[in-house]
Image (tube, rainbow, N blue to C red; front, side, top):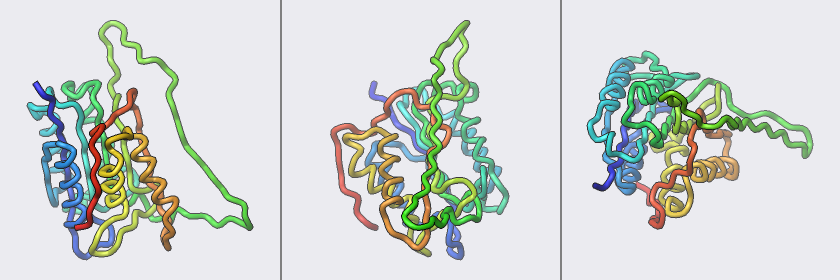
Length: 246
């Protein structure tokens, strides 16, 4: 039978905030995942505890055994390693990986699990001054060279994840007040346009290049985290579309 695709989205809408999910971001992501053929489980304004409960329930979703991949999208306020629930309490983002790892969600073993988080990770601006024409470039790229070896029935507890966060550690994640976040906008634009030919790693790189190339008063750089994908993951090879504004 044809495999299904699953996506869970949790958003926190606060009209008085400059760094939260908006109706635009929510609708843009819903449109994107419907286009990609994902069955969406959508939540809004969850407390920190209920976010965790929603992930636990999602990890037990009966359709996960037949799914080929999952996305988890969280949009809210945030700090380093946390996002804020509607009760203003912190939810630790490590729990996403814990709830969906091989031990707690065996149905997703060896399947791509993509985590997208739109939130600040701190209060810094993520920019430094350079003198003259000198440019400072720092790249953190960690690749494991160990082989995927399973002995005696043992398997990797955490594998085939990739996290894509809206900003580097300790920095702001900016958005246009009461309209949208550039992070969500660029994700939708890039995936709609290039999902027919690029894998998820290349798609995320294109989003990062948008931030690198686009002049802005506020500098922001998305970052990939806990990347344990061992194979190329294509969303819709051969099918392209143009992203339209809401």
